[in-house]
Length: 109
Image: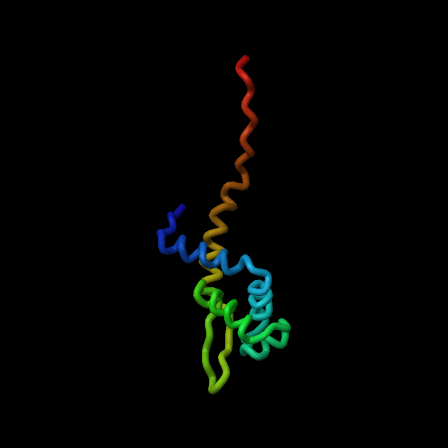
């Protein structure tokens, strides 16, 4: 197994933290389909722009989404390469699936 660096682990931890909120997961689900502007996300999620801005900032800082500005509008999309990093990190745990759980200790008495 390639051991992730401290920087990589910080990035992974930040991503899992960002994914721990139900509203942010809803944003991720909507962005799976297509790039959306803030106003479209607000409308589909039924939240105010100020509330959504906090969550988008968290997702962006975690590297899960990216944004681009077009005129007055900011469009958000998934940062797919970062999801690949998370997928690769989690895939390392699949190799433990064949390991049996530890047996309870028996008393020597």
